[in-house]
Length: 91
Image (cartoon, rainbow, N blue to C red; front, top):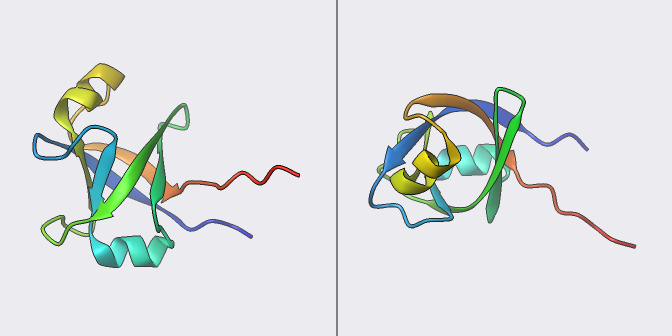
């Protein structure tokens, strides 16, 4: 089954705790995101965050911690592919 994904802007926000990403509730529902997201920048850099709904976030943005994004080398307003994190099933 194909995971739904969208290109959204990554924004640096100081009020977001490290390791978390704030998203609009309707965007999370549209993409089928329940707990964690995968952020892919330029098809090369792959990041994972625990996601949380936040009504103030515009539908076309994802808010992450400023210091964490600086450490990872992600600029403010970067466009990235966002999708639900794939759950690995080991047999």
